[in-house]
Length: 247
Length: 185
Image (cartoon, rainbow over all chains, first blue to last red; front, side, top):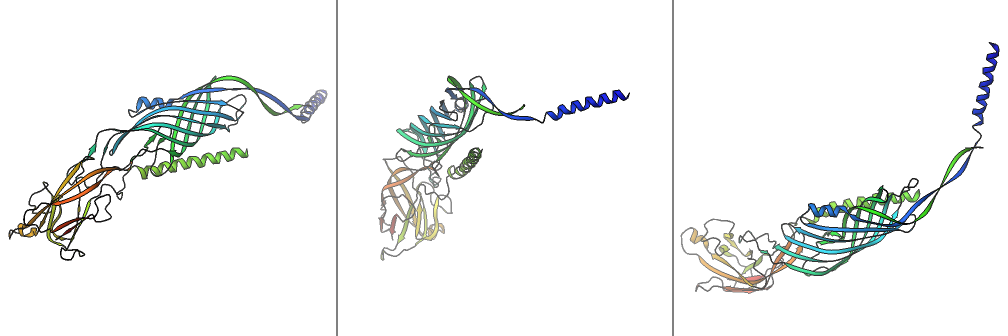
């Protein structure tokens, strides 16, 4: 009985000594290397495509692309074509034209391990050439009740060779849904720099810039796109982890 | 980490700016404000023929567009002035096609109380205003307005006119800030 007691104490001490021995550990650096894909990502704006089917007054598409320069910096651009009719109480106007936007995207999202998602801020310069057709308009006259006459002009006037330049800041994200296939959304704030406006009229809509405002030079927009990454080369992403190991 | 925080602040600021701009723009741009100068009316004033510097009220004037009403006996939408002493008037002009001469005719009936009370005859004069309409862009909410150029006015001579002469001061009617026509009587 006594012997067995001694034995159990001895075993207990033995175990506890090993428990104490675990405190003698050291942190070391462990280097992990992940392959990062670099290449050309090409895609299209699905939002504009959907709107083309839903909205009778809108037809448009946009192709987008980006090319990864460094770990965080991407060269990015969009090219598109839009036709938009504004129809309200006072006028009916159709804008048609193409646009190009170019700039960079800065990814500031710290990806886990080998993931390559983006939360980015983008900077663009934009240019558009377009035409406007004023299909019809009414003469705004608060006193037109007097002669019981609302004067309307039905013959169309086309204004060609219009241009506009703007800068824009966008915030968005791109997530890899499955291998090399990405979905993204973004919102854009635009500032108009210069435009050629038609004589005795104005640019109500600018392809790529979207609708204009009388009260300022700002515009807004949003995009929803799907894209595919064509990998061209791979670069190592080195991750240094601190790890505890036995001495 | 510091840079990340800065970027986050930039995003929040940009987003709130976007929302602010959108809200503001909706309010300002899409409704044609009441005070916006759109198609102007023709402003006339009545002066004394014997002392051309002085305004002189027309006694018991009734003023309306020709064809809108005949011998009105009560005030209506068609009577711009009904049976009152007036030294000025604002005439809405008929808008016509551009590059064509449009005319608006107005009836100015002096002493209309005599006709209404059936105690005598009033004196009816008719003026014919000729002009070209010209359309000018105002804004996306108001669209286009019309101004009037090459204004000229003639008086139908019925042998007994109370109006002695008409002076066109502004041959272009593009606002309501000044008087365009003086009528002497």
